[in-house]
Image (cartoon, rainbow, N blue to C red; front, side, top):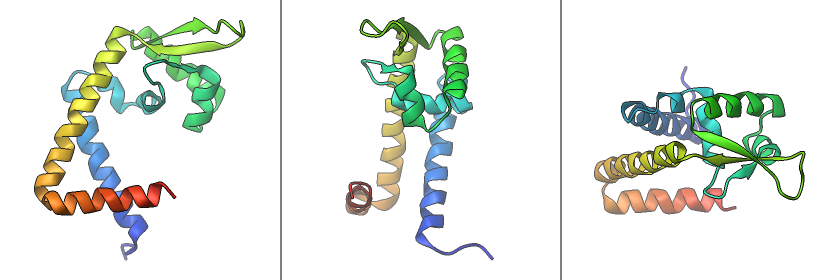
Length: 138
């Protein structure tokens, strides 16, 4: 029997959104985004992030993040710089290619949102967004 509770519904909705997003990113030429290493990109903002903080935010081991950052660096998506205040620490920053990928990600997210808004209607979509924000902001 398939579970019938809000958690299952939220998981399925998240999975549907993620599937559409990753398909869009692959179509835009960012196939690496559909790999495990793509999951850390959400934590690397315009100013970059310390690699240790990236591991903490992503909930991954330092070793896993090291491997993902190595791969993304090899692909020219991110680069590392020394922390000026702590020579042992490294910052992870987006390269121009990484910034372009994030712009594509934003464009694709807007496209998905537009489809969902059309499916639910403007009022239905706005209600869904408002209610989900209430849950998340608690």
